[in-house]
Image (cartoon, rainbow, N blue to C red; front, side):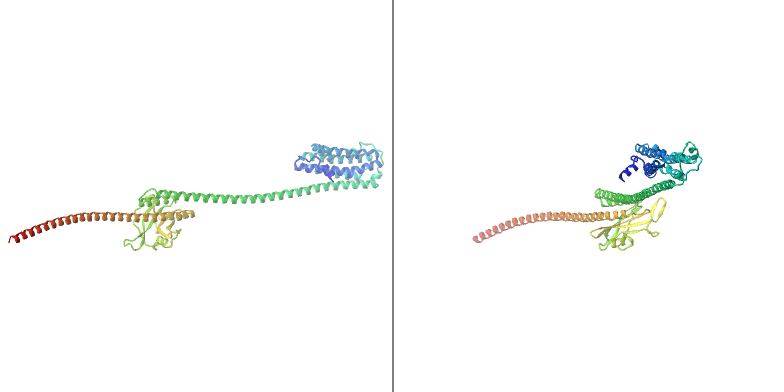
Length: 461
């Protein structure tokens, strides 16, 4: 089997898939003819028709040469020989066996017709149509002109045994074998082609499934990458905004100017239309907390308005009490108006964000806009609220510390003034005491002088 496979695969190396298939078919038909028909007819010819023995021997030699030609890459010539030689030799063998006055031997006609299928098996209908048509036409014409070929040979051979005896049945069997062999070879090639096609289709389907899976995986990765890029862009946007606000907070010592700058910047950064910053303060009696509007911004111009809200009043007061963001997408008519060159209009959305640090609300932002607030913008404002709340808290502590320091300095100055006044009083008191001591000495001296004079007077008396 190894040798037969080598013979069948002679010449298939470095050939295209369809040529490999056709060369294998040609080599297979050659082996079938050599061992299934030509070799038996060599023995038959030597026994009964010695003068015709050269024909099957020639068939074996020529078919072997054709296989060799296939091995040397001359597959057109090799396959052409294999496709026409069986028909030619069977017609010539039959023509030389009988004289031209008799009818053709049926078995040889059947063999000839059987081998006329060879070009269909050996040549490709799509890529070698010319060769296929040429060699098929040759085989058909050879059979059609059998009588004319028969007249070329003068024979004295007795064909009774072949025409009416057992040799005729052998020849008929050879024709049937050749026919079925051709059909089997053709079916075998078709089956192999179908199997190969099914394998190719299955491979293509598997590859398609892999490609779909890869495409799906690639799409998922692209979506994941796009999501990451979008998330990174949002993070960069938030980081840039917080950094800019931090820069603004360090740009001035005047709290009111800082609040105005921050309100203006954040409104424009969000592409909102209006913003108000409310800070938590004490009322005029210093008893209750209120939310007082410290800064507002609308269409690139500051609007100086006085506005105070008590906790729980409206959405701003509610956000203060609940310590949570309020996002209003369906704004009631007249809730707030945005003034522009086209007049006044109710905003599409309102966003209220409390400024919280250490669970304490230091202020509230209110934004109004015709645009949609994105989730990452709301998250940004909530994080920014912590920064601003810390600033407001520290700023208040600093202001209280500053006031306390000013009070302390004032009290120190007053104490210093009082101390100076007391020092002056002490100096005046000391001077008074010294004066009184001096006068006391004077008085004591005068008293002594008077006593001395009195003693003198008494002695004189």
